[in-house]
Amino acid sequence: MKEKVLVVPRNKLFPEKSFQGFSKENSNQTFSTLETHSFFISRETAEKSPEYKQVIPYLMVKHQDKIFTVTRLSAQGESRLHEKVSIGLGGHVNPKDAAHSEKPWESALKRELQEEVLIQGTWEAKWIGFLNDDDTSVGKVHFGVVYKIESLTGKVGILETHKMKGDFLSLSETEVLFDKMESWSQFLFSAWCRQNFSSAGLKK
Image 1 (cartoon, helix red, strand yellow):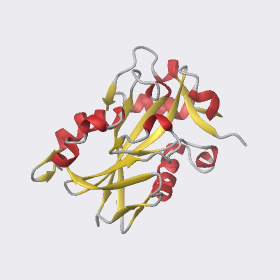
Image 2 (image 1 turned 90 degrees about the vertical axis):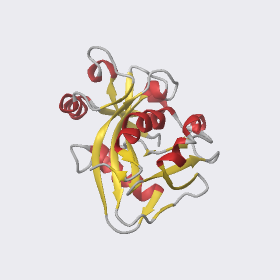
Image 3 (image 1 turned 180 degrees about the vertical axis):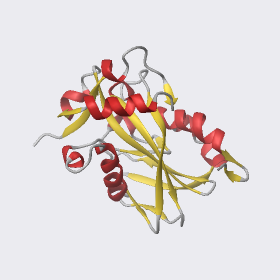
Image 4 (image 1 turned 180 degrees about the horizontal axis):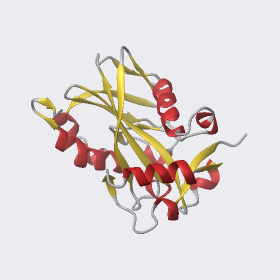
């Protein structure tokens, strides 16, 4: 069976001009649009149709003043992201995520965490913004809903080690990898991490 993914029409998501990069603006309107106008189509169709935006929960995992940074290996499915560095974990929203939730991207968030990483102990998730990139082939057909995941223990490991490798890095250590980052991670790092991290830790 072909995979189906959650999409929203571009003209509904951006009735006027789309933004480029990271944004926290118009959150109520954006979430209302996602809840009202999103639906499922085949992933094969979605990947070739820029008139739709695939809704992607994008999860940045942090512990105190460190960011969980991953490198996507060649075994991962999306060839356009091979060897790219990321400070976010993300995945498509599937019909099973919508079974018991009006916000299926939040169900997908929890599923993605369980599939990709093991976070020992308690963790908290908080929405921090949206991501959009219309300058790349990947970005043109995706829209990110960004959450900050706070690991209280700092014990986080990659489950699919053949697809990714990862570890907690300081802001300065992550900065060194900036040029290797996928565009969404560059946007998130520039617009959020640089403003919210300091040598003393994360600003409250």
